[in-house]
Image (tube, rainbow, N blue to C red):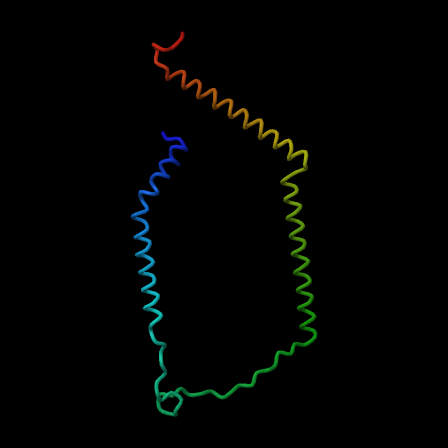
Length: 150
C-alpha cells in the first residue's frame, strides 16, 4: 500500500506525462466551440414579409389602443402594505433571535467549550498512543524467527 507522500509523488510525475494528450484535446474542444459560436453569430435575423403593414392580405390586424388606469393606490391599501412590511420585519427579527439562542444552546458556555477542547486533545493523544502500540505489535510479528531476541 502506498503512503500519501508516495501517491503525491506519483501524481506529480504523471501530470507532465499526460500534458501532451490533454492540451491538444482541450484546444480542439475550444476550437469546435468557437466554430459553433461563429456559425450561430453569422445567421441573419428573420426579416418580416415585404408587404407587412401595407394593408395586404398578409398584414396583421391591429387592435385599438387601450387606455389603462394610472397606478394610483388608495391610502388604505398603502397603509395595509406598510403594516404587512412591519409584521414581516418583526417576524424576521424573531426568527434571527431564536436562531442565535439555538446556536448558543448548542455551543454552550466558554467553560464547556474549553472542556470539550481538552477532551478532544486527550482523545487525540490517546489515539496516537494506541496506533503506535498497534504498529509496534505488528512490526514485532513481522520479524523473522531467526532475528528475534527471545
